[in-house]
Amino acid sequence: MNCPIANRNPGMLVAYAAGELDPGTAGALKRHLDGCAACRSMAADQTAVWKALDAFEAPAVSPDFDRRLYRRIDEGLRRWWWERLTRPFRPTPLRQVLPLTATAGLLLMAGLLLQHPGQIAPVAQRGQIVRADQVESTLDDLDLLRQFGTADSAESVHPDAM
Image (cartoon, rainbow, N blue to C red):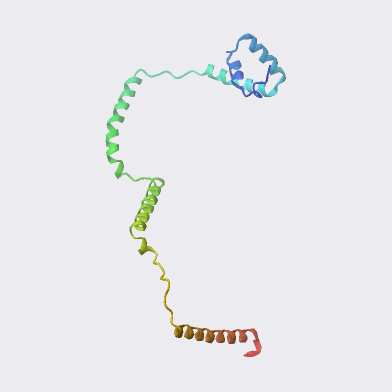
């Protein structure tokens, strides 16, 4: 007999524990259980489950069970329309509101971008006309700033300059 656990057929062990196997298969499985500890353990566990289920006795149903059940169903149906009507006014958990709010915000931003694309980010003007005297004045200012920068760095390098 092939091992039911190795062949991924644990249903055979469940059927053995329930006593549902034919005598020939049950005998072959019994011989296999003598040599296989894993199958023997699983069969013992399944046998214990079946014995516990056989020993279980369900509590008796009360005589007015049906009447109470139908009354609760009717009350639930009557409450249903009222709950459905008042549901928008009840506080909702944050985990339900947050995705809706984020989606609404994204849709609003997309609408603004599509409606006013030029107003969101101004476009830089290209091809500005620059006069030569402006360039000369700017270069003179940069030279002056460099002279201040070298004087400051020279004083900070030499501690005895003070």
